[in-house]
Length: 251
Image (cartoon, rainbow, N blue to C red):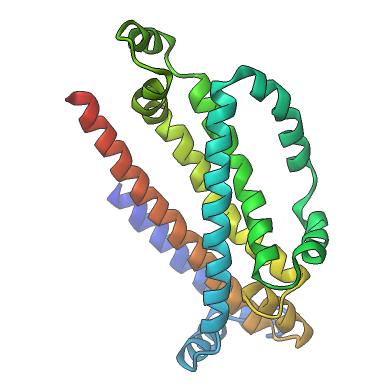
């Protein structure tokens, strides 16, 4: 494990060194060097230029993630538990996901305006499906023998759901949540691309208009850090939940 992390870090350093060497032979407009990007990022953070945009994008990401994931989890439980509801709604859910969100973004801007609401709705819609799909799968494929045991013990349907189906399906549900976390950043940025004057997505469009490639790369770096940070936070939460569930099983 330690060797793998060390090799990964060394690979990262090698990529940066190679990038720096290649960038020196090219125009900054085409490919800025990592050192130039770092200075742009450092100066922007130092003078507070990036901060309002980071807060705006992070707010959209978190609100959309919470709403979309919560709705996906609840609907996923209902569809997993009720076969009729699953057969009724699943084709419409698939159809809604088949439409590219970039194509829907202008409509949401038209319906909800240029403010934060439209970006949150886009982000929530993107986060909705991974949680729904994984929750339905987790509920459907719960061990039948364990469910029969709960029935023998006169457990109610709700008790079986809370005590067995959700805990047993936790790895699958959390896997969906990890996907939703990564996609939430994409959703917020897509919304800001289409109609936004604030946020990191809007800054990318502005930097493109100014032909400021180092600024664009600096913003992309910030988005990467935000996405990776949220992903690691979810991994930590997942680890604690699974550890707690394992302890409860042993008891």
